[in-house]
Image 1 (cartoon, helix red, strand yellow):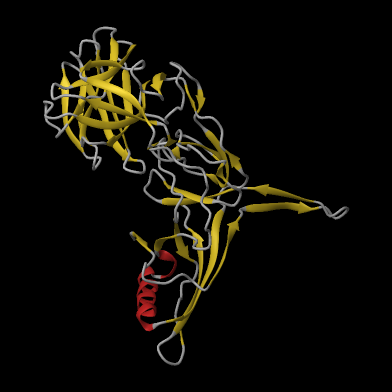
Image 2 (cartoon, helix red, strand yellow; image 1 turned 60 degrees about the horizontal axis):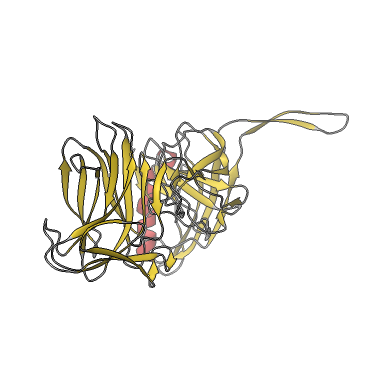
Length: 396
């Protein structure tokens, strides 16, 4: 049978009993001192008793049909506990909170994508993920997980203060600090200004390894100009990727390939306050070792030519080897950070999620089954009915 969703039209239950049903066996109790040996086995599951009182007719009809369609224990459905208001308090980076690596087993999960806050999780938090088989699962955090530094040694360059000294400029581009709030708070934004229709760009350069993959990312926001493009290329701009972006909507425009560059990924993520994070990942030059320019030109309408003067806001641009990762708030050229958080969880992982699997921190769900083969509604006078479901997590 297909896995169905629990009916959204049914209101939250009046009461819930929710907990972990451990899979343990007794090795026998000593007749002398009463001590007992126990064996913990795989297969712990969540169990719940969920009760609804006085459901109106419009809802008990839906519930009755849903239960009949499950065919007792044969049916499977997705449901999440509605009594858990906390799902972690650590902020997420622009890519999102996710599993760090695959092939994980046991009672600890390595995660990444947290950026800000004192704690990524608190003891008792519940979160979930969708496994490789497409089935959502639930896990409970068993201890507080404090935020720590993120980890990576792939950062080549990041400038948190884009000014005339930091940028190499072409044409009529200038760069000045902006006092308005940036993507990470006040005074972290800068203004790129094009003073005439002749255009220009601002860029930085670093040496790369031939044939390797690199990512250029930046936070951008519309000023008096609504379009820009970001580019990742070699110093001569003969190999690379150029991506036009709409700063007012976050939509990606035209993607242009320069020479023999290979495009790996182009994406955008909404941040807050009209800010978007854009990135381009590509193999810049497969034949020679060359300097990479990361470029933020200004344009009026997304075309190939400058049509007017104006400004855009930018901040947090960085160049890194490989795929896009967390933003690193530093002005040094090379840094090391801790990118993984070890989260103690229960029950143990039976099927490890893949790397970069998103963590579901809002109303996470699992796959459940009812434990009764015969289910029915208890009808009252008038149009009301009540029911109680004994449920357990469906193991696979």
